[in-house]
Length: 128
Image (cartoon, rainbow, N blue to C red; front, side, top):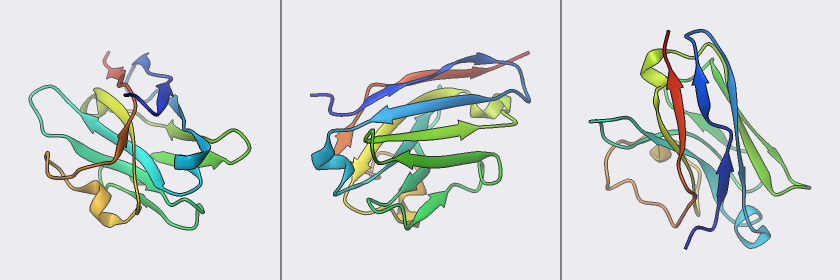
């Protein structure tokens, strides 16, 4: 059962920008870390960014640091991922995900990086 509702993907040229949104039930948004995971064709799943339930901790993968910004609107139970200076390597299906803690471990690659809740994927394509 999809608990998280993600939106905002699309196609842009290199250097462009997109913003992803993810809305969660209050029971998840108020208690769990929440963020983004992506999977490109032929590649393992990798964590992109997360924010703790209080917003006091935020982490980014090295590959997006300085280009992506995660933020939260507590009144709307929604997080956003502002993606700037997009590169072809950012092309992937982006998933909103949630688990108890947002830590650096969120950025691991591979299927052992497990999450408690998922949203449906949203495609981001960066191509000229």
